Image 1 (cartoon, helix red, strand yellow):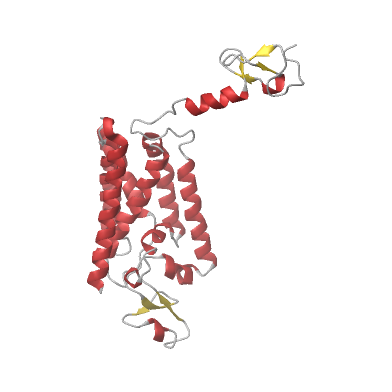
Image 2 (cartoon, rainbow, N blue to C red; image 1 turned 45 degrees about the horizontal axis):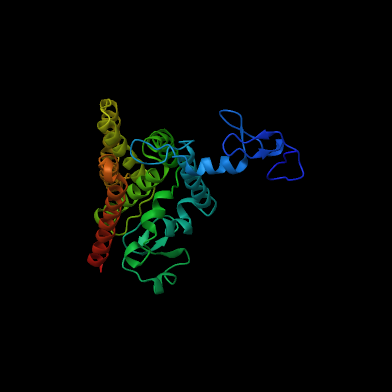
Length: 301
């Protein structure tokens, strides 16, 4: 009597439709026609070509997953800042972006030109907050995940929830994550160059404006209606200009320009050499940002 090739002690009268070997009920896997054995199912999954987006990325089964993960990270950092003091949190001093380090007070003030060694002796309420030029380069990215006011994180995360899944579905998960992080870094780079040296900047707005710019490029590439996107972007830039006293126009503009350039690299890469062109283009963009950051650090001395 035929026996299962995986369980020799079990009698079997059913054969795998792919390899023809006998299989028992525990080894039967539903197929388009009949049943297949576990080995053939695994081989088929390995050799079958994965579905890809129009721009070369793997098509996600759930296009909201990456956006939800980013929202969760932003929310976790926000909660950590709130429970450690909110706007007076020492954690905020290390996460928010500042070009130069300063001796800061609990109410947001600072003593410019004060060294770290004498900061603690000024008053009991002063702490040293490092800046990018002092070596706190992590602030260029951590500032994009830091928020204090609930309206700030609320608006940014709502925009991420609306824009993120659309772009991830269009370009794939890995490319979407690269778009988000590089847009955030582009926004921080312009902040590093154009904001006052002792001013602190925080929030995901640079990355969000990068997503807006990328959506505009994708819509233009596919011949979609860009008027509504342009109107939405225009409204946000008007709000940025009107509120420039407390809104970082540098971060918004830098993120938007970065998002446009990154999306152009991704969607206009020639099909024959798409992956190589996209990878080299994103790498070149990242290197350009790093060079700009190093140059600014040299200027600050």
